[in-house]
Image (tube, rainbow, N blue to C red; front, side):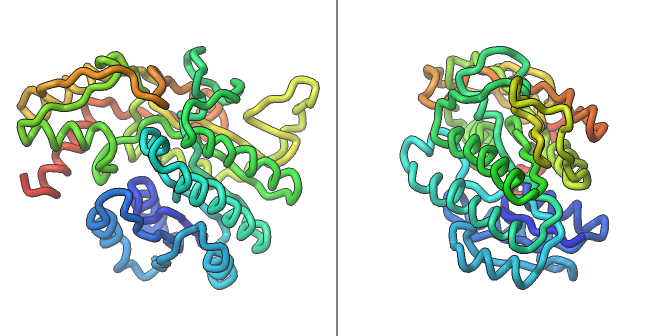
Length: 335
C-alpha cells in the first residue's frame, strides 16, 4: 500500500513508518519538525527512514491547508494514519491555540484530503485523556466521554466527532485509536519516563505528581504500532445493529470505529519508578506534588473490542519495556 503518515518524525510515527517499510509498503512521511521538544531527536528518528527508497519525506505542518491538499493530490495515498498533534496535557493550559491549530484545523485538512482523494481508510490518534472525569474502570470505548478535563482531551474528542461526520456524509471509513500512556525507546522527552531517567542519572530530584498515587495503563511502543497496523489493515464497516434509540459511541451506521490500545493493566506510578530505579541501578530523590490541573488520577483500558476485531492485545510488561528504554537512552545519550 501507499500510506501517508502525519507526525512521521514523532515517537509513534517514526516507529510505524519503519514497520510499514519493512513489510513493503510505500510511506509518505509528513512532519514539520516543530520545536515543542528537541528537534535533534526528531531528526535522529527520521534518519532511520530517510535512506529507504520507498520513503518520501514531506516537510509541512498539517494546519497548512494548501500544503496538505497538494500532498494528497501529488501522492494519492491509499490509506492515511494521522499521528500529527500538539501533545501534552499540561502544556494545553499554557498554549491553547496551538492545540486548535494542529489538532482541530489540521485534522479538518486531513479529513478533506481523504475525502477528495478516495482514501480507503483514515486511522487517527485519539487519546485515553478523552475519558476525562470518568471513573468507571476499565475505560470502555462504549462509555460516554463528554467530560474532558483538559483542552488537549477536548481536541481529541473533537477529532472523533469530526471523523464521524465525514464517515456519515462521505462514507469515508475512519478508525480512532485511544492510546494509553505510550513509552519506550525513541520516546518523547516531555513524558515521565524520559524526565525521570534524565534527572535520576543527573542526581536531581524528580517531580512525582498526585503524590505517586497515579495509576496508568502504560503501553509499550511496539505494542502500540502492532495495534495500529492491524487496525489499518481492517477497513471498518457500518454496524448494521446500530440504533439511534440506544446509540453506541464506539460504532455507527457509518463506516466508523473506535478502539482502545492499552496494556489492559494498571500500574501505580511508584511501582513504575521502582522498576526504573532497578534498571538504572540508582535510587530516585522524589519531590512529591499534588494532582495537576488537567491530569486524571487513573487510566485503564478495556481492549475487548480490539481483541475481538483484530485478534490483538498488547503484552509487554513494564519490566521489559523500561529496560529496553534505559538501554536505548544510555546508548543514544552516550551515558
